Image: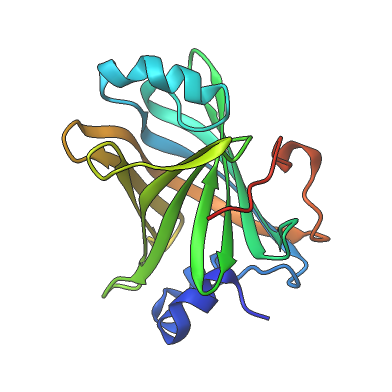
Length: 220
């Protein structure tokens, strides 16, 4: 059985650093989940005008309005099968700002060879997720084509949407990650970058209570 990332990367998966192959190799039959603990050098929304909107999305565990340096965080990755039979991975991040604790959660599901990333506790926002391997063996992910599920499916045009770019690698001692959400006209809306330790733990494939979303979304 292959992970969702092995499926979309194919042979390129073997070009990842060995530590990344273990990180991104979890699948529903692996019997393992991953838990990481670390610190973001910087995290949050640098664009003051966007913070009121992000205060609302934070209520749904999607994005956050704070902007600080040296922010502790944890991440838990759970490979599983979603309620619609798709192989999936749910991630739950707990970020401890000085003024508030935030949760940022999502589920990435694989269907017809394509990844869709569903954001927030109600999974009302989705993006198309593409993966690639850099020349240095890093994992690079790009999220585009934002859709909102508010009763009906709303595809945001490029002028209104934003794209997110994530790069992750092993520096010889710890994992490092940098993520940036950028709007074409408005600039950087969200950023987080830092390092973390990571370990695999036994997992039976059933999402624990805190990682269960309030609702699931089947539409892509």
